Length: 485
Image (cartoon, rainbow, N blue to C red):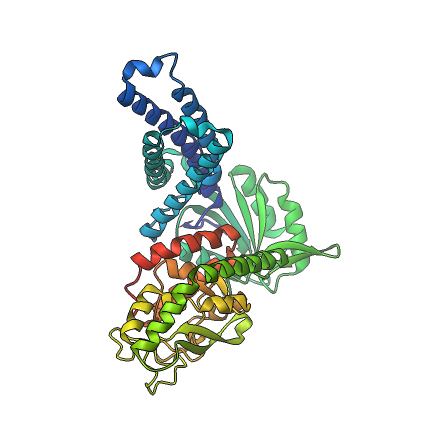
């Protein structure tokens, strides 16, 4: 009546493995930053004053260099983002830009500490510059090589999580199918316990069989695949019985096929809740992001106002028509707003300008000045006013025209999650843009990839993430401008 069958080896991302990699990379960063600081100090002293001077009693530089290296080694794991960045789908220019930005932050922090403690008086740039380069090289090398070494060197028992699935057959099959499609890293399904024939029951049932199996075999986690027809009281009884095993027990509701739910636990008035969906930004996050937008947008407008006046004048001299272009676009909660841009097309064209017809390469509608503005993204500068008006953010998913179509289909007709982009304010730049998804979307695949990056940003928002995107935007504008026309 009840059966057990061995499951195939299934692979997906494993948080434990990522945690191991992260800890090793943090150790690597701390050690290499300290070691390269000492080595560069030794090399500088030997080249400048001779080998004997390194050990001279009047050498005041080397003790200070050692103290600074110790401080840098302690700060490195906090500043350098410890994760492998050279995976199968990694964007190398963006990855290198991230590391360079983090090394720059670390060096800036050391400079600030040095000036405050007056230690910079004794620190020559001939030591600091090579050390900064060495930190960058060691950080890149560690993230490119160390994860591969760990996967080969660590015991396989640490690299795989042994999982048993228990519950209804249909729910278990759906869960296995989800694992098979996920691909990556290691989770090994070593057994599946469920009804042989749905509807048949006996006291204890396959949970008793699972407990006996767990006593004889090491199991890291039991996943309860509970379908909609399962009696909720079964869950309580199953968990109570499985507490006899030294293993984690987790509930997997039969919802995987319809959506990628990220279940979280919460509480409301003392009542425990399972949260299926939540706002991307809480109230504190909304306030923080609003302050970021208003302060930075105001400062940028003050700094670049002469440039904007010059661009507007050039547009008017180049072709007849207004300097600004206005277009209806989708914003927060799918509400429409009027976006501002510098005009890049001839105003005499019969195109209604609603975005139904996207810009093509060598588009005859684009003016000479407009071609430069589009490639440099300077046509987006008036959107700073949209940011100050609260319609847009500096960072977020790019707002699309309300009538924009790709392959004669609206975005929502191509990607089911397309409306999720509108859960936050649209941005002047975003995670998709710095990863190369700028400009027109000519294929459905481009729309899918852009939406995937937008949703990743929404689900992982932080102030640091915003600042990183802003810092990497100029780099992306230079390296990823093939699709801007």
